[in-house]
Length: 335
Image (cartoon, rainbow, N blue to C red; front, side, top):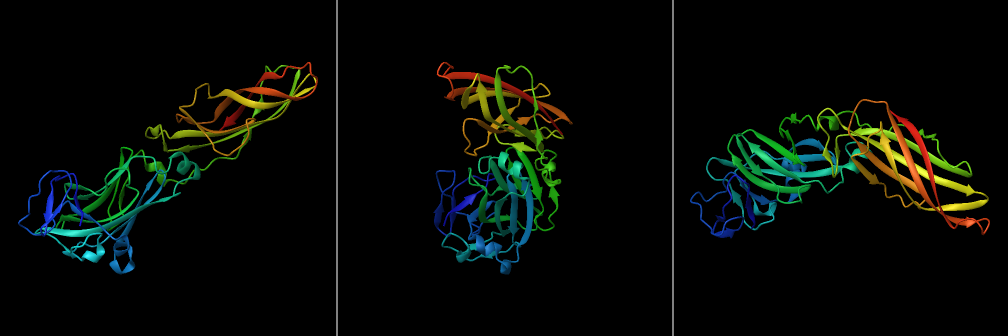
């Protein structure tokens, strides 16, 4: 049976004669003969979440979804069949054992917030707080789902804490009372999905010998967290703009051209985005679809776009150039 210990006490343990490795190189038997506060063992999740277990349900929101928790009442013993080990558990004097099961359910926040969180990528950790002591429930990157039995001090008030990329939140598993940091507070407000799309206004400066048709529209929203740039500053959520551009046709002196590539800029009130995230939608080189992430500030805002298209001749006079570049511009107001 693999018995682990949280960060409060990092030593090798022996339980009824079975050596259990964690962070030390030797094993010291305990005289108490039971599991002490901080000791934990992997659990059969269904033994904790089943209605018959009588566990209390609570939850917290993280950028990629809802962290759902089930915590059982403290007890003195746990049968081996409820664990992933082979031995019964007994609490040491002054300790009790609780079962804790958890999972992150995607999509509790807006669709855009969930997508930009980079589900499965952000670092995180869970811990149980028992009075003034803290015991880790997770190790490494696999923190989004799990179940353990953990020993805690007898009669200690419990809180479960999640650390999501350095921002912590807590919940009382018995009452559901939450302690939410300012950075995470917007997650609990009305989900703000993307606004209605607005078409770009044509810009100036295109070669008058070109006849080109460009579809361009954008829409915006705000989010609390974006993978790769992290949490937004308190009270200033990231402003996210979805930009869609497509060059439908380009004709120059009777020759028709198709786009082979493009590059360009998009500025919000003259400022460059903190991050550009291409959307994977499988369109051709004539189409652009991306999320632009800007520092938050009150709107409305002006998005200015400039795109240079690399073109290849499809039809027309043989005297026309095989390759040409075309720059098109536009702007759109974002709330």
